[in-house]
Structures are given as C-alpha cells and as structure tokens.
Image 1 (cartoon, helix red, strand yellow):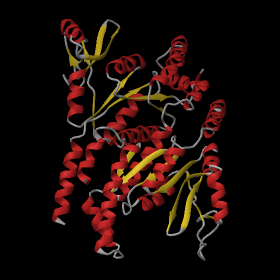
Image 2 (spheres, rainbow over the protein chains, first blue to last red):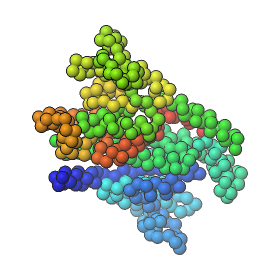
Image 3 (cartoon, rainbow over the protein chains, first blue to last red):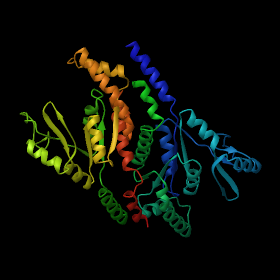
Image 4 (cartoon, each protein chain N blue to C red):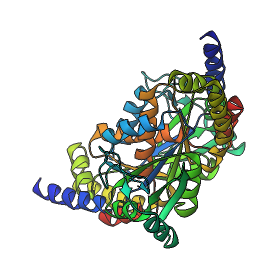
Length: 215
Length: 215
C-alpha cells in the first residue's frame, strides 16, 4: 500500500509538470463569451489572462488584476520587443495581451483563459498558434438580435451594425479549433469545460513522457 | 417567439444530420475499459458496436445484441468482402467487428463505441482512420498488478505474463488520439465523456455547414 502511494505520488508530481494550455475564448459581441468565462474559471483550475492598457484606471480597478496599466511609451516598447500576443486601439486607448505572464503560467502547468474578440484572437493565432481557439456562436442571428436588443442600450441602427459585423465575423470560425453554441448557458459552459479536459487528454510529444512510468 | 422556435427547430434538425463518430476505447487487459464503456453508454447518446463471432451462442445470448453469430463460411465471406474493421482468432473461435452496422449508425448521426484490445484497435485504425482512438491506462503497473491479482483467478505466472504484455502494449499509445488514466472510475468516465463532447465541437468540413444558418 505504501509503495503504491509512493508511486502514485511520483506520478502526480510528473503530471503536474506538464505544461498548461492557452484557451482562447472568442466570438462576436453579444454571444456571452464573458459570462461563459466567468463560469468556466470557477469550474477549472486555470488563470484568466490580464490585459495591458494605456487607459486611466477607474477607482475600483486593481493593477495586475483588472489590467496592467502602462504609459504609451511602455506600450510601444512592449510592441517593439514582441511582448504582446495581440493589441488594438479602442476609442484612443490601447489594449493588449502581454505574452510573458501567459507563458509563465503555462510553464508552471497552469492553463490560461483568454477572452477576446475575433480580431484579437486572429492576432493571437499568428503569435501563438499552439493555443486552443474556441468560437462561441449564438443559437441564431435572430436570437443574437434579441439579446443585443434586450440590453436596451442600442439604437436600431447600432443593432443592425452589430449583426452585420457578427455575420462577417462568424466566417472566421474556420480559423478556430472548436465551436460552442451558447444556447443554454449551462450546456455551453459544460462543452467548453469538456474541450479543456479533452485537450489535456491528447496524446502528444509531452504526454508521451508518462510512458516512462510504465516501463 | 414563434419565429425563434421555428429557427431553432430548423437548427436542431440540421444538427441531427451531422454524422456520428466512432470512439474506439482500448487498453491492456485489466485497465477497466469495459466498466468505463458500461458507464459511458448510460451518459451519452451512442450505440455499442456488436461483434461477429463463429462461437456457439450461450443460452442467455441474443443474436444482434450479444453478438452476430455466424458460420465459418460467413466469416470468411465478410473478410474477403472487406466487411470487417478488424478480426482475430481466440482459442479457435473467430471474432470480428462488422463495418456495415457501424457505418449505418454514423450516417444516422449516432456515435458508436467500440471496446477492443490493442491489437484490434490498431487494425481498426488501418481500416477506419477517422475513428477517435482512446487509450485507457492503469494508474501504474503496480496498481494493474493488484487489480489482476484481485480477480483471484490468475496464477503468479499468468499475472507476470499479463503485466509484461501490458508494458509492451502501452508503447502503442502513440497510435492513439487520447489517453485516459483509470484511477478513480468516475473521473475516467467523465474524461472519456469530455472527449466525446469535444470531438463533436471540433471545427471541421462538416461542422462548417452550420455557417449557412448565420448568413
């Protein structure tokens, strides 16, 4: 019994040394990718990627948790040093995904979840093709229209714009590894969780190192 | 609301038309692949593959459920017509996996679970490479020894033979897509189930047909 415990201890130690995976959760605006990530992070052992921004922090925001707050000069430096997995300019403020903290988590065997729009995800894929790219779809365009309308903060014109944007964005699903339809939230979260489990169960060069324990 | 239901109905109709997948659950003797399949079939909507055999039916066995019972001549005919995904001779009786019922289920959108030893799985991979091959591992060789000993029906020599066989078989894990360690049964079943869910969520040529509903 003691021997079995020692062997199992050794085994789990080795398992823990396996690198983590970067799960990129992406989709058109209004598909609920943020809500899915919020539920997912409670169910799996993973870290949320923290963005870098040149925006002024709001009162409740915490450095390194809400965002990494930096100057424009710092942001430029990150770009020139290849330190960002993706970046974009939104209404004059700059946002990006720093590569170093993501890689540090992965190296420590932790999975990382990155919630991001389609444009960002496509950039991440260029810079980090080994990520797992998951596309969140609405049940239908009609349902997406109702969800955006339900927010109450959009004019008819802006709803139409968002839907036409969504239609175009959905074509990029070809660049992704998996897709999940967010019809019933609970099911969508379960499906994304299943994908994270399955990815860890893949037979690849790294998982083959476990063979040593059976020789 | 009505319109949304109609659209969703159409959507689910289309989803149902997606082909099923063949999940090949395989591993050395004593790893519990049979028990995993028994639990899995209750949790996912799939059919168990039924083998063909030249063995005499036992009293409780049902044609087409336990096995397809055939003559030696029938079995030869199946082989010559390429009708078997794999076959083997065990103590003078012949066993094989007929291809036709598997393909019929897949075409109807049903997943199929095939529980089989390593030799059989490797043959299936030759004949049906689009299957999903899942290798069930024991937590350790020591644990496998204890499980086989626990059955009480094996001599020390036959236990040693099985373990040496298992060690050799585990090397074939490279040919598989996924591996699952059967330490706690419940976790192992959940992991296999997660793999089946993730496979259905893959972006591939067939799943891209859903794009039409968003155009």
